[in-house]
Amino acid sequence: MLRIAVPNKGSLAETAAEMLAEAGYTGRRDSKDLHVIDPVNEVEFFYLRPKDIATYVGSGALDVGITGRDLLLDARMPGAREIERLGFAGSTFRFAAPTGTFTDVAELAGKRIATSYPGLVDAFLDERGIAVDLVPLDGAVESAVRLGVADAVADVVETGTTLRQAGLEVFGPEILRSEAVLIAGPHDADGTERLLRRLRGVLVARRYVLVDYDLPAALVDEAVAIAGGIESPTISPLRDPEWVAVRVMVPRASVNTTMDELYAIGARAILVTAIHNARL
Image 1 (cartoon, one colour):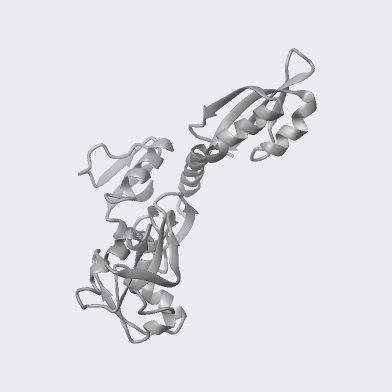
Image 2: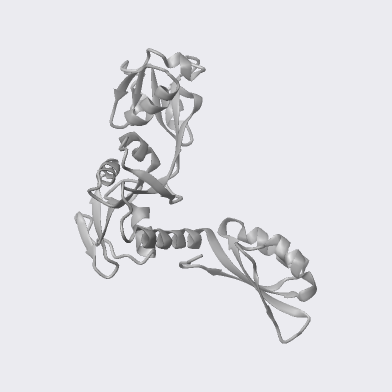
């Protein structure tokens, strides 16, 4: 059986569980369950702290897992590798310090940097030859400067509101852009490719919808220029030889604009259908 590590709590857990369910797997029903077997799909789920997943997978104890890219890199497990982006839980990591204190990351040399991701930050600074004194904290790092335990912080930045409230401003380059990822261990395990296909099908279903419409045959080239689909639209004849029916996949985020543009050139009976899963 394929052994899969799944976040047991936190921002990754709910969406990871939803994706696996949409991919056809049967996960836990009780949040207290730490181990679930899905015999139909030949997988075992192990529900673990997100910070620990890269360690279990990288060591070979488990085959694959869902975690954050930030947590993967912070773990510094040589055997763990990212094999697929999952498109949720996006975040950006930046340095921050009291307004006007630093303008360049090189100025951090010899300073105290508070962070919840010491492995990630240390690797970033090592690449640039910058030696600092890292202060590992488990969350709420923005208070470290005010409380006198650090000169700057390295943390997740979304809107920047929390940092500004603490009197801090971001500076220097991005440390990392993170998101949820599927990771694998040092060896390719049986069942990994099937899991990948299923998760990719879920990603397609979340990103695209099907658009069906009728159109004068003479306008097909114009319509394809507006919505060309992933490969090519499906075009079928109608009873009226001067009209055709078109089916095409369109990005969900832009579907209303696409519908407006198709209607403007003469498309009619435009219908949108959700995609529940796919294999492309």
